[in-house]
Image (tube, rainbow, N blue to C red; front, side, top):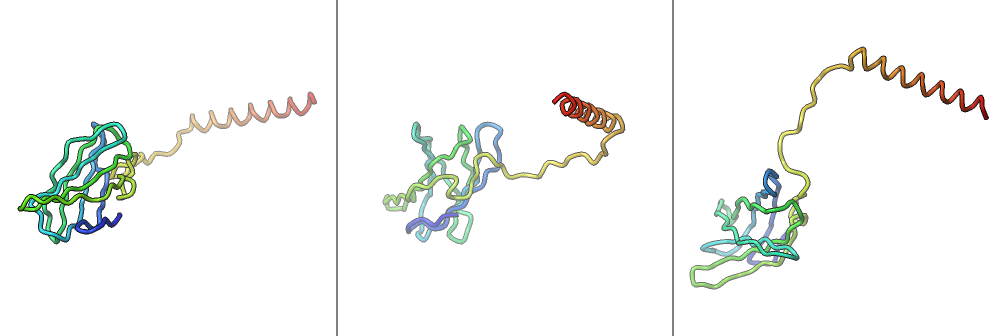
Length: 142
């Protein structure tokens, strides 16, 4: 989480999907009454179209932003007032707001609970015996 300069406040994000690029859930706090809040992702090479956030209560706006690649994008927020005045936030990166582009939120993968079968133990024992024999042969020859 990072806190932006007024009229914007705390910004948080988390990666929610990575099936076609990266989908990030972003929330931003504001201390003014805006008609709309936009998030504008950009990188060193391109600027993506803005995504409108939705008011979620308690002076918070949030929404999902889909990015074409899983990298550390920069974002800025635009707050639009009814009279036409626009406020722009400082630039922050996904990492600064708590998003790791390589780690997507979700249920942990459970491994099956099965013991190592007998054939595998025989294979492990055979490899250990072969390594011991090679070590003894090397020690004997030198």
